[in-house]
Length: 200
Image 1 (tube, rainbow, N blue to C red):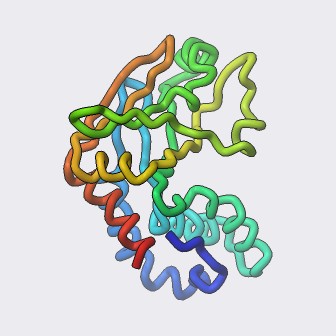
Image 2: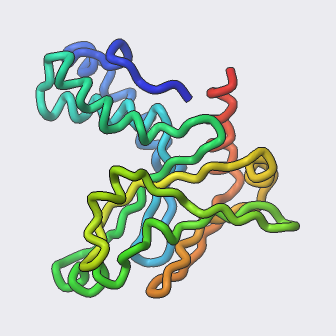
Image 3: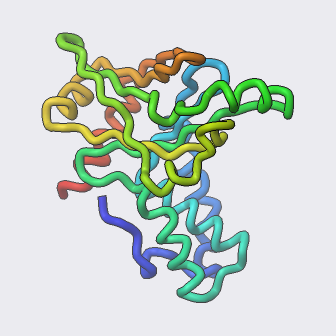
């Protein structure tokens, strides 16, 4: 999946003209690609479209008009666009108040390395998530985890086939938090379509 370039980012006036239609498209896409894993963890599978929306919205909110400002956003968000054969996701720990944060964030240290993709009926293929080195370096692992994490799965040909054919699920396999959620055929098809877009 091609990374975003400066030319892909519309200027503020051009983006405003198409924003409502694009926003509806991305909301529908994110609804499909957003999954709850247990009571407090949610993941969103990212792709080029979701990252384009993120950058356009940041540029709009911050009123960015220079190429250098936009390039900074591209440098931040382009790594979240999955490469061929990969899945990229944002993991959110969704807590309601300070008391829940004090309870859960220390418990969930290391959660970003505890995410697993499980695909195929026989045998089930389990793929462990990998964590971006830059993100990992920012985490306070000894004290408490962050509430947002960026992880990816790198799948070989057999693992991609298992995901394509199903069934498949995503799990958090952490000592303090173990839940698993089925991906479903529609989401799997959306993820596979990303790979086909990359290949075209």
